[in-house]
Image (cartoon, rainbow, N blue to C red; front, side, top):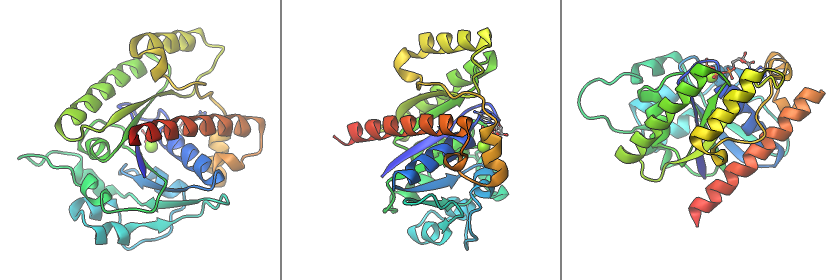
Length: 261
Ligand SMILES: Nc1ncnc2c1ncn2[C@@H]1O[C@H](COP(=O)(O)OP(=O)(O)OP(=O)(O)O)[C@@H](O)[C@H]1O
Ligand SMILES: [Mg+2]
């Protein structure tokens, strides 16, 4: 079971879209995945039309036992045969775990996740900050995927995210590995974007940047509007993005397998 955190310092860069794109790609392949919504905004929970569960991620953080996490898991409306997507729903209450309450900090989600099995992949959708909730995600993960848009502040945000990953690796989770950087909403005609892409490859190494980059396509909003995975948006843009998410999934699985050996 590979656990992948999708994070960024900046808001609105496409973390949730990437999580849902990857979960959709996994279902098309017949895999069982779990989406954990750690963002108090609860966007992934509502886009997936997660079914009601007795508990949410807030309860799991408050009481990280096997019982609580199993009570919180639920199915959702995303039926892309032949796979399955389950959700650990998020809610606004999680915000209280985003601040340090003083005293030594201990990972809670990691503790609960260790007792869970039965999924091929787990994707954690992080809030747009590098606070304690994102730290919870990183402490529980095998791989970290940083999302950014091709902009000056985007590049700065990536740097801060990388520092946070290094910190969590050192303090809490020696097994944590950077999966790479996803550059989203690229409008290829804009020179600034190409410049940022090149700059990103120079700073973090060509290998770290996921290829191909994700283009800006209306299909993302269509998928949201219809409440469907992008894989079911049968337009040129929908197919283009679905193919890219499938490529990303292959890369993540390869990284996860390499870690196991
Ligand atoms: N490749 C894309 N093409 C077009 N629109 C996109 C693309 N990726 C994301 N968007 C749009 O950008 C907006 C923000 O995306 P998303 O919610 O995935 O970002 P986020 O990083 O999860 O945001 P937050 O930080 O608030 O959680 C959404 O309205 C989404 O439809
Ligand atoms: Mg989001």
